[in-house]
Length: 103
View 1: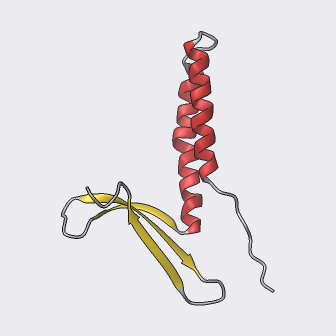
View 2: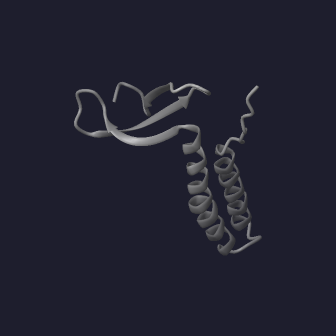
């Protein structure tokens, strides 16, 4: 029996940061606080926490990058996920262009 370390979903960091920053922005809109806390949250959650969450996603095999669609020269956003089969030298991967196939 093998022991695998499980990790949480790092996307929660992004959702929490967006929600908290939006809530504090509303506090500013009603006059309960200045602009300082909003800027601080934007830097912390918008920069540092998102970068850490991105590194955590990379551990799972998910990578976002720009790559031309077939028959096109302009790069488009693509998300790829690669999974290593435990105890095997086998990788399974899939990728999708973000935004649909029509454009």
